[in-house]
Picture 1 (cartoon, rainbow, N blue to C red):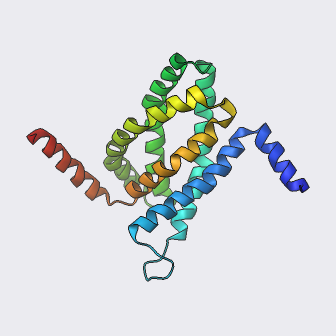
Picture 2: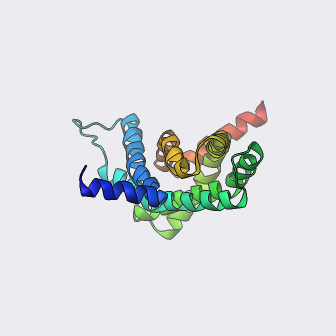
Picture 3: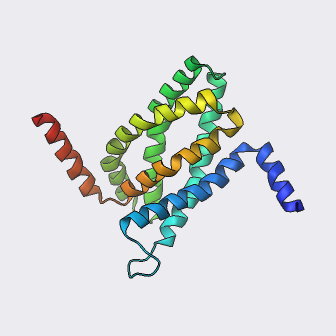
Length: 197
């Protein structure tokens, strides 16, 4: 084993946030790549993959999501120590009402700025896409969070969440690249269908 790889292993053990950053730096661009594949992008066609989009996902996931998630998980472990169901329920509840909305707003706003959109365009995207995304997230992530807080050792929580987020990030990539007017239109149709039922 080389000196470099030994140093990387030591750094990952000493600073768990680095493991999260490394995993998010890989998983987020892969999610963008998968979402683009579902979109119809191909290597050998006129509609080729947008590698800058993948790079933006990697940069954002690694340098923003992983550190903020690590910070949240650290704070949650201090406030509600232990792996009991009660502690996990508190962590999950507070994650759903604090970190999750913060993370979703940050995602749409930050990614819009990385796309060189204006401040007002970024705010408009948050306004149109936050609630539809939050509703889906609130129906999935509490179960994942309970597993994470109850069963996963603290040092492995960020990497566990990053693996779980592969599919979720594909969904975020899909929502991110939906036209904001289409998101509003789909939400209005669903609301109308619910009211008429």
